[in-house]
Image (cartoon, rainbow, N blue to C red; front, side, top):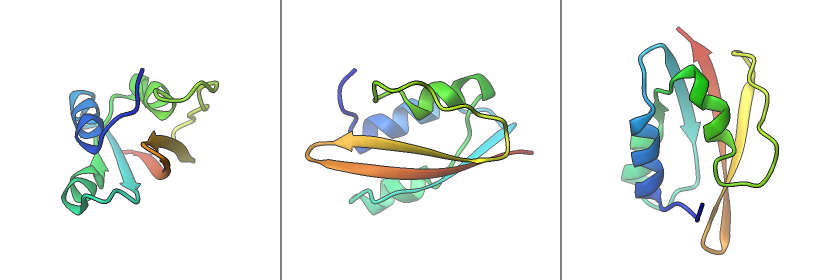
Length: 89
């Protein structure tokens, strides 16, 4: 799997959304409109761990439903750290 652009990341997350999960994300995306769109993303529970590491060759992070989740996304020469907070509503 290659490095995702902002647009590809948004599309991937949009395909995984469901109303029972809210992922609030902050990032250093240069495209502020896409950053705002990414701010609140809904994900199916079973996809959260897959999403966390879909671009990295590391073991999946454990998700227990209430802790902060962290993921690094490699983009070009920059590595962007996306902090996510997952809450069950």
